[in-house]
Amino acid sequence: MPMMRNLDLDLLRSFVTICELGSFTAAGERLGRTQSTVSLQVKRLEELLGRRVFNRTPRSLELTDDGKQLLGPARQMLRLNDATMAQLHEPDIAGRVRLGVPEDFATQHLPSVLSAFTAAHPLVELEVTCDLTLNLFEQFHSGAFDFVLVKREPAAKLEGVRVWREPLVWVVRDRDAVTGMEIVPLVVSPEPCVYRRRATNALEAVGREWRVSYTSTSLAGSLSAVAEGLGIAALPREMVPPHLIAIADDSELPPLYDTEIALIEAPGLSDTAHRLAQHVVAALEQGA
Image (cartoon, rainbow, N blue to C red; front, side):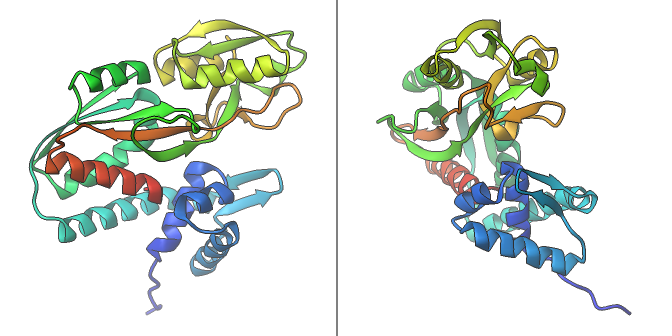
């Protein structure tokens, strides 16, 4: 009988984080490790599997077929691990928790984070509302939420604690879409929007003309508009689907500065809501 080999969850967490962030450097920052340490972990994982999981060049990073096959089970193993640890180390809690979050961030990052918490604490009732950051702020200060996740400028002196840093990229249907463009057509969210402000400020800083060609309140609507060639958008790299192209370094378009997501808790937060807020912060910091 061949000897069974066990997968190392620490190596899998690094692998999944690289897949989500699109680079070894960004994964290292999320996990609190150096880029070289993350590279070594991937090497150890590939040696353990006897398979390559990434194809790397100086300008690109892609999953191999074996890497694509590993990604789903790796995520499942990490979710089961995190839920099990929560069940063993946290007492049973119950109650309703009201959370407000930007729609695009909720779609990309929160489902697995929240499902791990509810799996560990089945008596907790979650009430999640997705909206624009401005609306979330207004509802939060009127008492509608126990805590919110909101977009903000990294240098802003605002309440809350930073839980996520977002590298922004230009999103286009194809590279020809930006070649020789005199006036840049933008696909944006309604004002006020951090991504929208990032895009217009970057273009104005280099003297590029722009116009709003499409406005959508949802991530799906914005991506569909870009896919149909109605304009280009500024979005976090992780939100760019495979059928569209992310541009971070291009002579036709200026670079975009990062934004961030902050978590703000309401005064007098219940123990249940505080536990969930702590779980969200820890999970996002670990790239869960």
